[in-house]
Length: 89
Image (tube, rainbow, N blue to C red; front, side, top):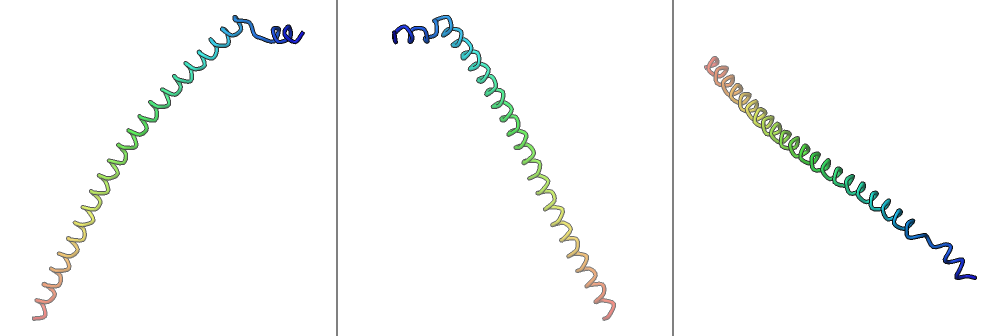
């Protein structure tokens, strides 16, 4: 009697094939989704790398500008010192 019960609980080969088809389709969809996510991630990483390069360039330009400002102030102080000293001699 137990053998008859276990035979009734087993899915038919058509049911197994249908379930296998469903799982294969789900697998294909998940692989597509993974590929899309990987592509999106690669694009975002590329964009971040570009932004980082722009930021580094702007930082370099700002440092150069700041150095020129310091140089200008130093030269201005030097000339002010020279000209103010020559008025008292």
